[in-house]
Image 1 (cartoon, rainbow, N blue to C red):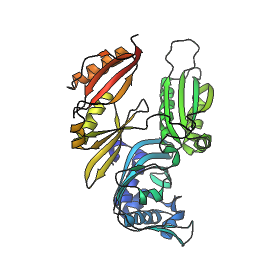
Image 2 (image 1 turned 180 degrees about the horizontal axis):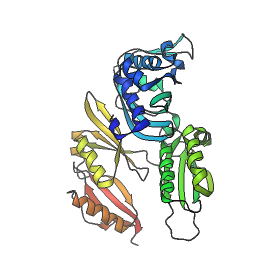
Image 3 (image 1 turned 120 degrees about the vertical axis):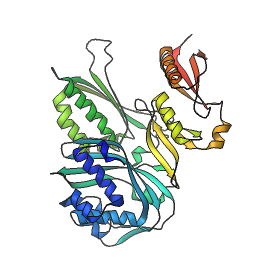
Image 4 (image 1 turned 90 degrees about the horizontal axis):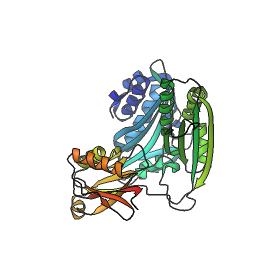
Length: 394
């Protein structure tokens, strides 16, 4: 993890995750307030429950005793006043006994023997700071999954973040109207704070945008939020980060809002979670899918010190693509159109094709499909990604 990306309290809290893997007691004393509280210590060893740096350092020793090669990769960060939140992946290898305790007792609750397997699991970590030191920490995490996650897999830190298949989705659509005279800086702060709510684990998906401006009188800004169910949405509302967003942005920036809520996908599949593509060189293909289609890396999978795969996510849609090292499979699938990506119009298809050509990626001709226009673009292994327009030519 690189803390140079951040500044102020955010950089301090990011550094504290590095300390969990490699820091000394002296390092912890420089980062944590003498009365710092770790609210996750109830089921950790008794030594972790003492306040201040010593308690947090005891947590680090507990983790290191069970997991080697600890690493925390930050995917998203949000901060407001004294609160900092990270959405991270914790990874390592289970090489020692992982011992948990009955809450606030010395009685052992479970001992999970080492599996020798690598793991990667998503978590959220919450911090409060004061005078340049961390005063409080809590987290959403799954200790059992850390000890039992299969090698090279990503486990979610809470049930809401698991695959959307086979469950109802609770959707909330919120239309916002800006307060009279609200400045551009305040509007952008509102947008950024709303995007930061993605760090709340109960929120499965969030999409937001300004109104397109085609009709006078429309609301100014819309957000679409998906949750596993209504109960998850209620828990989301009570999260400190959401409460801070309401107090410091919604109440000061909005003149009016309208909310519509509904269930969908009950008992049925609700879309593809991701498409996995074999590649011969993970880094090369990761960069290519990012440059041509705009995908961003979400997760990295490392096995025996070698990058074995990545999970990519498109920042403006729900699209996820996984790239997995498999040279033989990638050679066998060269020339096959493994996945078809949708674009809205013929003009959008031409834009993507021209961008691919400018980057040196070959593509086939734009042709008529059954309903819309199509075009094939070959990835670095020759596997075809087909673009298909929603706009119809008939």
